[in-house]
Structure formats: structure tokens, C-alpha cells
Amino acid sequence: MKRKWMASMGCGLLLAASVLGGCSSNSASSGGKTTINVWGMGEEAKSLPKMAEEFEKANPDIDVKVQAIPWETAHDKLLTAVASKNGPDVLQMGTTWVPEFASANALMDLTPYIDKYPEFAQDKFFDGSIETTKADGKTVGIPWYVDTRVLFYRTDLLKAAGYSEAPKTWEELSDAALKLSKRGEGKYGITLDPKEQTLSFMFARQNGSELLDAENKPLFNKPDFIEAVNYIDSFYKNGSNAPPDSGLDIVQAFKGDGIIPMFISGPWMVKMINDQAPDLKGKWATAVMPKKENNTSVLGGCDLTVFQYTKHKEEALKFMAFMSKPETQVKWLKMTNALPAAKEAWNDPSLKEDQNYKTFGDQMVNAKPMPGVKQWEPLAQSYLTTFEKIYRTGADPQREMDAFNKKAEEMLKK
Image 1 (cartoon, one colour):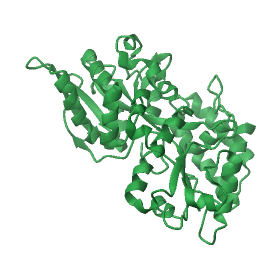
Image 2 (tube, rainbow, N blue to C red; image 1 turned 60 degrees about the horizontal axis):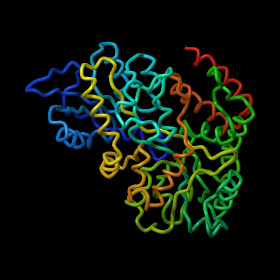
Image 3 (cartoon, rainbow, N blue to C red; image 1 turned 180 degrees about the vertical axis):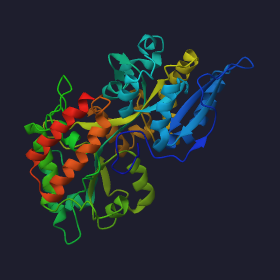
Image 4 (cartoon, rainbow, N blue to C red; image 1 turned 90 degrees about the horizontal axis):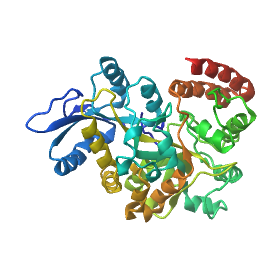
């Protein structure tokens, strides 16, 4: 999926295709070595060969070939691999894709190997990231890196509005945004991206919604979900939210006079602000999400999986164990800016001593992935159309969500 300043919860920026090696799981052993093929996706795939070289030094009997797959073609390429039973040995898998490909029997059950490899121990990872690796009672992946959402805010502008620290509750967030929007014409308090498909679901969970019941029936027209929709819509109605069609660049709008002094986004924005707005140093910060019933954020990122039809199972598992080591994940962080899934890696000074990154570790304690059903992606995209009717035309939220809930019921039956 695409990583924007407010993004769908997958894994990373789009990558221009570059084939770095073969891609068949039927690769033969030669010269006393076994070749395994790894499909990497997103910007991270550019750096993956460097990590493979380190693995090869420690495992001289294994060669690793990496193929970089652009996200826009990855889904179809995976479907072709499943149909032909001819694909990679190790596969990077966006967390929201796991249910679909697990149900297609494309991912090997790793449950028997959890105890064999200490690096796979589930208590070494955040609870939410472990949840993304489960399907039908099986473990089909190992967390690789994580992604969540936090609040970015201008400390100087909020202080002038009467807030010496970040808003801690829904009420404070709403109040701060409204006060900031009163600074003058063309100034806003916050931007809540209406094209971000996880936003309403995240706020609904903060209000106590389960999204789906125990039988995977949708709960989108229940009071706790409707209240969350109304809460988000209130920012549009009172003028504190930046217009959805403003076309504002978030970093440019964040700097200077702070046209947009608050927004919700992921870890990549830390580097973007540092690089593109160095004059803001000391004038901005990150904070965990404000709380209603709870302050649950959304969790995404990527897992590593083994292709069901691999002929090099043990070699593939060795590579995954190497990538799961905390020290490897710290190196990966410094190479790609991808946050580690291994909790021990968060003790590294680059994360522990940088408060803007540390916030993401704090939020990970209260972060959950989207429901693990294969229909979630199209369902979430469909929701955006429903929400657009509400914030653009003033359509009645209860009526619109009743209709969407019926549609969701049909989608979830497929």
C-alpha cells in the first residue's frame, strides 16, 4: 500500500520496479549452496540486498536473491504465484494482505517453528503486531516492522492557544482545534484526511466500538460508531478542519505560521519535517492519540512469511530469524527509517532518546490492526464513499451508516 502523510496501513512508499534476482521457489542448489528468493516490496526493498549480504556472511551455504516488487503490481503478482504454485521462498506481506493470502493457502503455517527459533518468540513483539500474523488459528508470519498513528502538533502555537501540552482527550482535541482555527482567515486547527480509510475505524475503537462482532458481522450503525463519525464530522462543520480539497502540502502548511498546526500521521513524517522544515526545531512534537474510552491507534506495517510451496523451508526460516533479531532490526531502522517490530530494539538510543520517535513506541502499546478478514480492504474503501456523503453534503450519519452496514454485511459474506 502507499505510504502518504496519512496513509493506508500497509508497508511503505511505492517503489519503481527493479529486479535484483530470480523469483522461483524452485531454485536449485548449486556449488554446495542453496539459493533462496525473497520478494521485497516498497522503498525498503532497495536496502534489503545489503541485509541479505550480512546474512550470507553468517550463512555461507545460502545465497539470497531479492526481487523488488512495486506495490501497484504486487497483488496481481502474488495471485499469479499462488495459482502457479511457483513463487518466492520468503515474502514480505503487508499486514492487511495476510488474511486474503492465508485463506488462499499461500502462506506456510509457522506454528511448529515458533519454539525452534528463539527470534520468533511471540512475547518479543508488540501484541498488535502478533495479531497481524494470525489466520484461522495458525501463525503465518513473523512481525518485521511496525507502523502506527500519532498526533503531530506545533508546541508554540498550542501554547499560545492555552495548551502547554498536547490534547489528551477528544474534548481537548476539539477545543484546541477550534481555538487554533480562530487565529485568522486561512488558518485551521487540524487536518483529518477524509481519504484515510483507517481514520473513522480508529476513532470508533477509541469510543468503544468493536467494528465487527464475534461472528464477523459489522457494527457500523451502532451508537458508538455513529458517535465517532459525528465527532470527526464536527471538525468539518465548525471550520476547524482544513478543507479536504485544499491541496495543501502538509509540511509546508505545518511550518511558518502553521496553517495546519495539528495532524495525525505515521513515523515517516518525523524525518520529513526534520529534513524539510529544520527551522521548526523545538517548535513541534508528537503525542499519543487523545483518549475517549481509550486511545487505541491503528497498527500496520509488514510481516515476513514463507511461501507455502517453497522447496527451501529451513533456509527461508533461517533468513526470517536473522531479520527478526533486535540488532538486525536496529540496523534496518537506520537504513530505511522503518520502525522495528521487536520490542527490545526500542531500547536503542536512536529511538529511546528521540522523543518524537519514542512516542510511536509508547503508542504501540495501544495499537491494533484492522480486523483480520480478507474482505476488509474493499470494505474500507467503500466506507470512504459513505463518509464523503456525510462531510460534503450533510447527509444524516445514521441513515448513511445503516445503508453502509447492510452493504458491509453482504461484502463480508463473500
